[in-house]
Image 1 (spheres, rainbow, N blue to C red):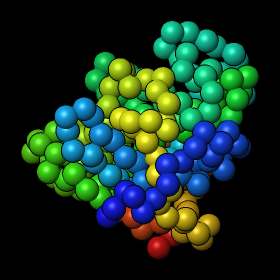
Image 2 (cartoon, helix red, strand yellow):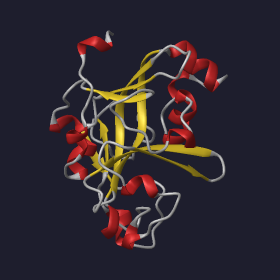
Image 3 (cartoon, rainbow, N blue to C red):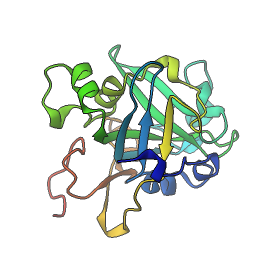
Length: 208
């Protein structure tokens, strides 16, 4: 795969309806290149949309603003990286405007290049488990809190044009791990590419 065959996704792509962005990110290429290291290319295969002020599962629900979620209040096309369970980082892409703090969580990716580097970072894990989850992919790509608030048009984290995934190949389900205390746990805001083996968790009854 040659990255020169793809265009860097601009901020305008993210400044749209968050559910649409979450779907359209499927098939796009995530490019990560840290200083002094080779680049790693991965296909985005699973996402979740978080709808800001009106979404009880979102970090900015009800207008909440803090040092932790400040990047969500920045312009579309900004990275938002947070730390959970005292163990894992999660990579998100900010959408909409500064007045509409919404984002898309990158839940799973399919490695396309840089597998040797990913294997080294993930140590003895099985290949299929390298990047099939938001915490796993951040470990595989060495993404942490210092990558919060970055412009996604510039290195080290960029999104490239990649493939367009037809609607019939996109599966939608409720999001994972947000609890059951509100109606938002039933909202079908998780999207993944049908039959892709790198998806984090395929629900029972998933259409084949």
